[in-house]
Image 1 (cartoon, helix red, strand yellow):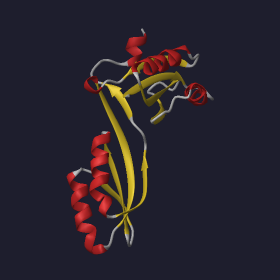
Image 2 (image 1 turned 135 degrees about the vertical axis):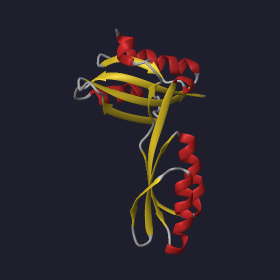
Image 3 (image 1 turned 120 degrees about the horizontal axis):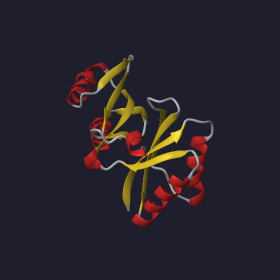
Length: 167
């Protein structure tokens, strides 16, 4: 099984997310990650979808997405030609005596401490999936009270933009 990151430019209209997600559910495909947001042009939204499958399934997904009425452009974000990031927020249960150790790990990963409670710290970290996974593994010795990940979002490097590709 191979992982594919798809960047999908869609019309910014009500129901578009439901129609795209419906395509996946109707065909029994799983979405590993999904992020959606308005672009620099408020007529369009960009979806970043991470899917896994064999080459035939991944090709089918791209073809089916391109057929949807609201979809303007579908592009694979390949590792070598794109930048993909994810955000994680983690609330860690930590005593006052253990805080310096958590702060040290946070600094090494260039994460931010965004909230401190009596027995907790909330940490924000942005990076690729491997970086986030490594950070979570290092702080796993502390009590992770809550964790949320945004899912992957990304863009092609350089001048390779979707809007130029559409012209």
